Length: 175
Image (cartoon, rainbow, N blue to C red):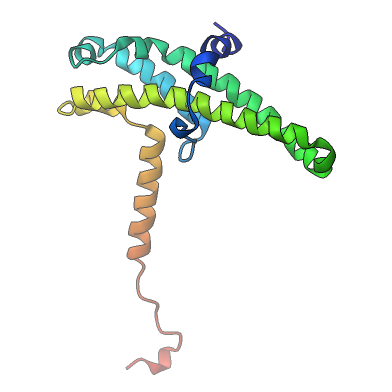
């Protein structure tokens, strides 16, 4: 199924996400989030029996590829609208109706992200529950992107804490 077909298939589910339910992509870029969701789909195939035994609704797993395609299509539309918006900023007074259309597209984009994120969070939660004693399987239910960011931040903190004291600027003052 093409991303456009995925989008059209999921559009009603996406539109039914209310404003108070919307999650906005903040920490992980959308493209990386989609890739990680696709990897999660592949990863949990080997764990189907264990996850279902913990009462994971397997239809959510089966729906991941379609949700990924829908978000990818929504992201493409949103990126196109962003380019158009930048051009239209010069002519805002004349082009203000397009601004409102952009707002509506942004809401759609965030609804599509929310639709995928709900499934990813649900599956990851069950994966952590089912495999908390099995580090080899548990790692597939975590975000590699967020893990790398966390490791990088930890290294930065450690290196900033281990900076040696500045040496005296004037060696003649030392005793």
